[in-house]
Length: 251
Ligand SMILES: [Zn+2]
Image (tube, rainbow, N blue to C red; front, top):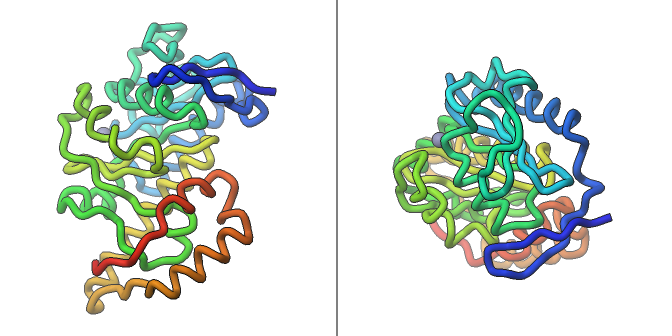
């Protein structure tokens, strides 16, 4: 079963509703993801925000100014994709505009995670994208992670800054700010955030050991063929993986 979603470019694409849980189940999953982000130290204090698209097309999102380690289901807010409030006592996250922009641009996206994980945010602060071809698992799972230009947090600038990458990316570094990841499900978006932070951490350590060595063009070609044969590392990442294997760079 599918629902039709209008994109900002005026065409429609199908969103598979079988991947969308009920409102209650989605709220429970968002709370679980928030607590896991906090426990994994991918978010701190009241930073970060998580959202998911419901089968009816509305968005359920974390509220502003609440520690992710303490979020409960009754704290969550539901809005239309044009930001019209539907339910909830609190104000939605101040980064709601970025979330809604991604949902409008990517009808295939069902969930979004935004946090400030330390290693990946350090790369974003140093304005270094995670675009080196070092780890086959990262290339297969995420592709290259681009760096969006600096935008003042909580403003419309953030959505505009990610516009060049939103159609093809699964994860984007936000300069001097943090990371946003997204996928078909909450688990996909959370996994992408874990992968980005883990890759940034490994690259940071490798740099202290003299620098990571990028895969050669021949090794990348073999990886691309292996991914094509297996249909991508998983279904959710197949499109971004195929789109992002290119020649290696020094890092
Ligand atoms: Zn932020």
